[in-house]
Length: 352
Ligand SMILES: Cc1cc2nc3c(=O)[nH]c(=O)nc-3n(C[C@H](O)[C@H](O)[C@H](O)COP(=O)(O)OP(=O)(O)OC[C@H]3O[C@@H](n4cnc5c(N)ncnc54)[C@H](O)[C@@H]3O)c2cc1C
Image (cartoon, rainbow, N blue to C red):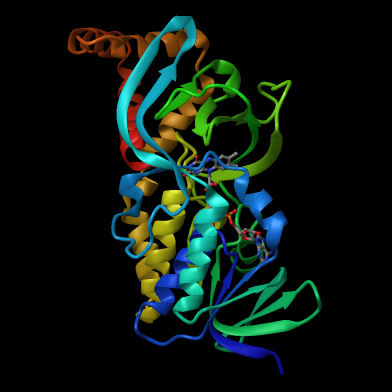
């Protein structure tokens, strides 16, 4: 007979570990098992493929989670547009060493009584009043609730929801030698990045850079990796007692591609909905959350079709100190830019 748990969390990245911790902190004494297919260096390697940029705001309401493993404090975003236009924005956050952050989070989960084990889920089916998961080694597990936190190519989503992310982008990440702008996230915005960008983030004395796969290249690097970023949602995030969180639910932001904040917050919300015995509360939270605002998708669609000249003209009013008049002039000339400005403002504030 397969062992049975109250909750099976598939995937122990930011979303899965957040869900696991808050399930244990719910006061319901739930038996929670979190499985991840990767361990040790392979797990660190997977999770290093990231910019590691997370705002201070992202940790609000997530106590006791903190930005463990913070390597740099960030106070500025610098956007470089075609035609030499540069715009900058004051922001507030960190670059975290993501494997270290997750290791700390895993320690807290275990301290609170969760079980974290290695295991690769290959299929999931409904089973009586719960679910049955089959693992790569042939064993089976049963659970009353299942939380799919298994990333972009989620098995839980495939088997229980039958849906796909609205969009999915492969992103290449490189670690290179060089001098990053201290305390600054640099973004290169050009047509060739197809609605994305090339980033340069400080990373412990090195530079973390990357871009959508196939749009650019790096000749010399110390490390390289590629991973998918799903965004724009997947439709319902709750189906019976199954819930999808983080990249499994394509919750990364369509403008900034930041997904750590949404993953941590969704994990928390899913946990409290399950603990309350009302999984649908999580669906309602997600549908009403600013993190899932349709403005972002509209902005992504527009930006994907813009030429370098469109981008230069849209960004130019934000150069320099006196912005009000140039911006007004631009909005009269090109009112379609309005939703872009709103989405970018929201993204810098809320999406990472
Ligand atoms: C190159 C790149 C740069 C990025 N930079 C940033 C950034 O600077 N800031 C930001 O906020 N976001 C960034 N993101 C997005 C962010 O990394 C993700 O949105 C976030 O990691 C989502 O967390 P998650 O827990 O949902 O999924 P993941 O981090 O993908 O974790 C999923 C976990 O599930 C496990 N798993 C998968 N399948 C199975 C299975 N079948 N059985 C068991 N376990 C399984 C995996 O091993 C993994 O540990 C970046 C993404 C990429 C690709």
